[in-house]
Structures are given as structure tokens and as C-alpha cells.
Amino acid sequence: MPIGPASALVCADCGQLFHFPDARKGETGKECGVHVIGMRELLGRDVVPLCRRCDMAFRLRYGVPS
Image 1 (cartoon, rainbow, N blue to C red):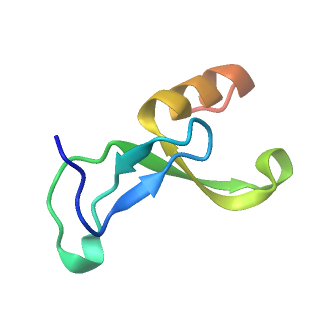
Image 2: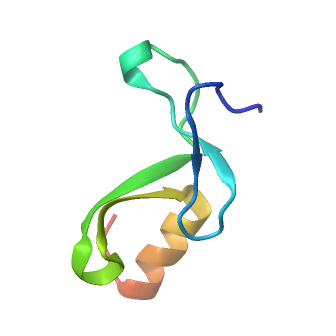
């Protein structure tokens, strides 16, 4: 499925585009990624966009619960 025109994010791990619908604009569509929040100690940033595949790999690698 094509990504939304205003909601394309780049995964911080693999660098691929993914869809994250913008609720402020009422954009529809299924989320293909996540925002990892509160990982400053591990990643050096508070909000990190990850696609679903990289999010699962990250959580398995570091034992972060979903």
C-alpha cells in the first residue's frame, strides 16, 4: 500500500520509509511503524521512529517489553 503524503517517516534503523497516520490531520490508514519513546540512555534520543520489523528486532535484542 502506498504511504500517506503527509505521514512518511524514515526508520532510524533500516532507513526505509513507513506509514504512520497523522491523527492531527485525520489521516486514515494502518500504522506500519512505531515511535520508541524514552530511550535516551540506549539510543541517545527521546523519540525514535522505527518500522515494525526493526521495532520487533530492537525489542528482542535488548529485552524491551512491548
